[in-house]
Amino acid sequence: MTAREGALALVAGGLDALEAERDHINDLNVYPVPDGDTGTNLCLTVRAMLEALERASATDVAEVAAEAAKASLMGARGNSGVILSQIVRGACDVIGASAALDTPTAQTAFAEAAAAAYRAVKQPVEGTMLTVVREIAAAVAAVPPGAPLSDLARAAVQTGKEAVERTPEQLEVLRRAGVVDAGGYGLLVFLEGLVEAGFSDATIARPTVRTVRDDGGGGGGRHPAAGAAAGESSRYRYCTSFLLTGAGLDRADLERFVAGQGDSWLVVGDESMLKVHVHTDHPGTVLGYASAQGSIDAVEVNDMHEQVRERSDRLSRRIEGTGVVAVAAGEGNRALFLELGCGAVVDGGQSMNPSAAQILAAVEGLEAAEVVVLPNNRNVVLTAEQAAGMSERRVEVVPTVSMPAGLSAMVAFDPGRDAGVNAAAMGEAVTHVRSAELTFAVRDSEIDGVAVRRGQVLGLVDDRLVASGDDLRAVFASILSEFARSETEIVTVLTSLNGERVSVAELEAVAHDACPEAEVEFREGGQPLYPILVGAE
Image (cartoon, rainbow, N blue to C red):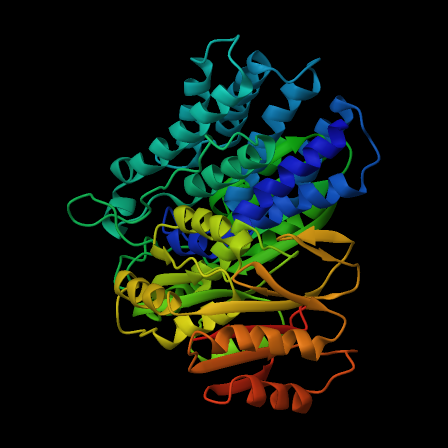
């Protein structure tokens, strides 16, 4: 793997983690002022890095590190994004000058990342992402130089978690609102994404951070309560940032001017490129002054007061009760789950398993206080459980291994009950369901002692081959006969017959003959690879 490929994998991992948590980080943002949307700003900053690395042709470590540092500065959004760009720049300066990325190099990189972040802020405030990166740097410095990088990664993530949890003790506004610092939490999420992408060691588990605290200091739900303090609104209205390029840029002069125009100001970079961020009532005045020094680009002006109102509206819509996230493939199946009361459906299934980040994003997108997840595929159960562990809401996973099982579970769902009660009822419903799949053999093989040829229809009941042959209708009849022997009362058939020489009417006739006593319902599922899925109760 080249340096560029490795950097792409790491940055993509960090971005995926941030995207999954973006809305939550936005909702945490109460100090010192709503700075645009912290989660969105961090995502945009990291996405700019990823896109620049995708375009880059460099493979040398030094060139890749320089490209990443430059891209983070150019793409930095908001106060949090600018500070993150300095953290990235400090780390990349060390890594780019090193022969290998070992533990001593990583320790130096963290130290310089923290130092660069503090240099960027003229009046550092503790209890923010500055504190988090400083405490992480101190912790990794204590790791023995001969220890593997995985040990350093564990120390970094665990210390970051602890530092984030302490931020309400360091800032009164966070304590009053009952949340941790948004920027610090976002930095931790980014770091966790890097670690997950860089190490396959399952023992590096993403820790759960108590992002909301009750009056006794204990853990709470993931989102701030609708009545939580909204934080301190800035006396200034517009979050303004831009990139200034030119020759011989006077950073000190620009700092003096910007400091007189508002607060939360940052000017970082060098004499050829400066990134400027400020909260002000007069963005045009700042842009006009800067344009006299060079060319301005990447201008962002956000109305922070409007964002405060939007955040309050968003949090006020949080509802009590439970929502459901289901994993399903096919437009028909997706619509069916939504009809039955699912709050969100994640695309996925056999051969197209979703990531934990995708499931987590769907969980976080629900307005319900608690969530039940239906993986609906044996290969997705562990991923769903991982996503549940990444969320601080109460999330219960009902380990459904098929879409018919998931649909039966939905019949037992009651949004007015808590997630635990729902999970128990839905899990009980699933125990009465048998599932079958009809698909085609992709190669000559032997399954359960039965020889099958490539292209033949396979009929599997509860993952066991019970029939095979050249005729889809005949195999379907064998499946239903298997169900009829166990006195099945309800049969649900999900079809996806594109290109198959059989009609739903023909299959209905087969079902009537094979299960004359059962209630059989056909629905167009649209799932790939499996022309027929069957659930029997």
